[in-house]
Image 1 (cartoon, rainbow, N blue to C red):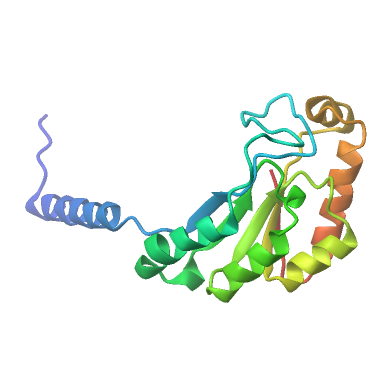
Image 2: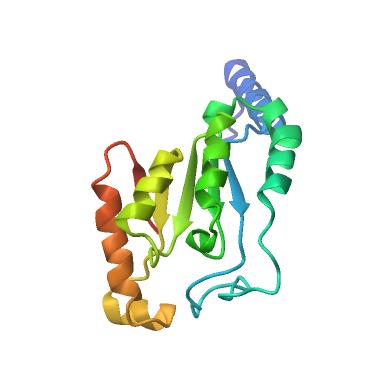
Length: 178
């Protein structure tokens, strides 16, 4: 038995196709990642980055990122609807992280970061939140033995867990564990 599409179904499928094509052509930006450093305080077995504690490649100057953000992104988006994620390497090794975060906030963007949690203490979390931090993702690799093995650091599991505990106590701060 041959199944033919009715005129109504064909019109519905055509409308759906056009809406999808319009959505794809518009391709609205929701999240922008800035890999702001290649340096890291760990040397994880699974990491695809070329991260070292002292990379021969200097961190990308914040001014370069902001020039690109201001000229190539901001004119085309609603800044309040695009989340800027600072990642690395390990973002917390960057001494100007709060300054960069405050500049992202000043430009109207919400911002977050991805961290391994090793260097996130109460004072640093407070200063990051004062700079406008809105979300944190903590990298976590399972139970203690496996996590420390993968991260090549016997304190990594405890430090990541401490970071997660600090983060979840902060009202209004979005978080996840990856």
